[in-house]
Length: 423
Ligand code: DLL
Image 1: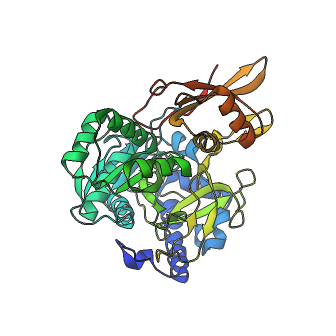
Image 2: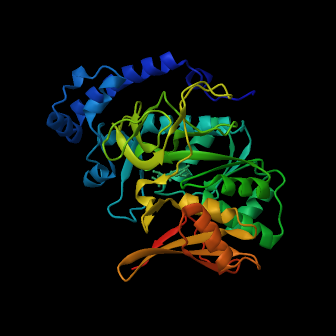
Image 3: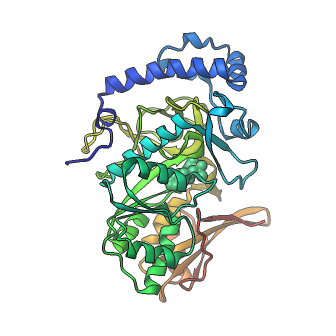
């Protein structure tokens, strides 16, 4: 497969080079964090770590973990490792589940972010002057500005639409011959719906870069078919430095390439903290190698995945591939002794002919017993019985299925709220 690289040297370096560079950077990162930040100093002192003893990847377990809770406790800048005067930008998670998480950037960090994002755009087959429409919000959410910084670096023609006003989004794509649509997965589904209402087609659209939430292969296929595009799954989060920092899948679509010259990726057993063998599912953990303002050292993401391959890919890249994110650790729903993820429900629903793209998973309690109800939009002919039967086959138990007319379930412009916990 012929492929395109933004940084061919970094993207195709040998495994030995990857490891050599990771170990060299790790030593520097750990020493810097200890010397310049009280949080990391106290943490390593408590663990009895002499940072000069950290030599290679085998020493990673000595460093313990950090997680979202640490970010929250250190809000806004307790983990800062550079002088405040050097800062140039801040992004924050929404904080919908408590104190927000903040990530700040100096000039170097902004460049690192832009480099990672530019690699993603090039990996998707975008080149100088190609029109790209950015639909995540330009603001505290990292999605909009991250895609912007990367598109600047890759020399793309940016349509900075930001979120909302869906008919205008569609007109912009049509009027400026947009080749690449970027955004949160569920918002793309909304765009498709409004295109139908407006009767507008977008023949110039060829590529979609979507992420921020898990989506099933079937949802990806529906999006690709409706929009006539090749859809990519982009990964990243506030704590790693934003969208695209950790990676994306290539045109081979055989897993997400983690930018391993920038991050060490580990998959751990969330209960024991031990690294699991390649191929086994576990929690994704990142260590940043080139972020200065707030480096992360073994950050537990809460996301679940597994290593697919560390061998060179058909695209020529050598960086480890992980499976598309299965869901967040805390998204797992346990009902009647059965564990499942929203993505499994999505797959089951989309396999039913006539089922549309909007659904909700309602978790409730009745007489002290947890249960689930599924609301789903579907065309005439799909009944609650059909939905329940399908879910029973897939999940092993049958939640109640309520079928809704097209356009009646709530829509959101950001990440969708698929799971609703009823009090
Ligand atoms: O959602 C960054 C982003 C923006 C990624 C736009 C892609 C596109 P946060 O708001 O900090 O940042 O949320 C990060 O979202 O830990 C995952 O649980 C989830 N997530 C992000 N990308 C994916 C993806 C942005 N491709 C959290 N697949 C992460 C599944 C994703 N989940």
